[in-house]
Length: 168
Image (cartoon, rainbow, N blue to C red; front, side, top):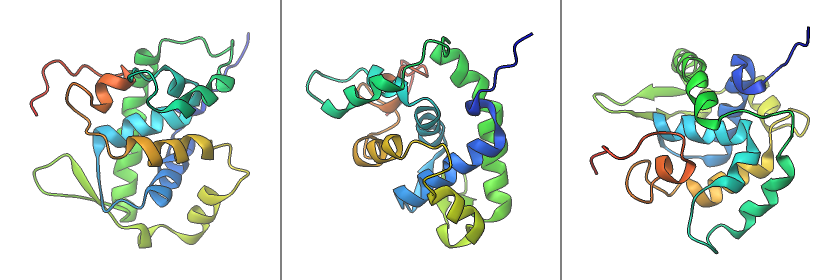
């Protein structure tokens, strides 16, 4: 029997990835779907090269080809869907800690970086935490300004979520 570990399905690693993203992003508010999509890309940097964007846009996405691994042969949509429960659990934990605060009647959270415990922040910013800083930097520089929905939105370019029936 072979035991396989996938950090994408590890709640503690997910918490660390989300903290690392939030610290680097420095956004005042985040949308749940964007946070989930970005976390998937951080956990699976090889998927960044597969973003469906016009030729010449995000030229540096080619650099993520080196992250591809023949042992990580999975359907991205299935893995993203499998991560949903862990994402929601971790987001709930971030709310309990006081790092995220739900804005009433929306899918947005207010981000309170000052509530990140020092030890957790240090670990999230460390170079020895197995989180791709390259992926986070790419996301913050290129993807955080893109809407989640729409014909050129994150759902469409990542091809991880249905977007046909979104209302803009």
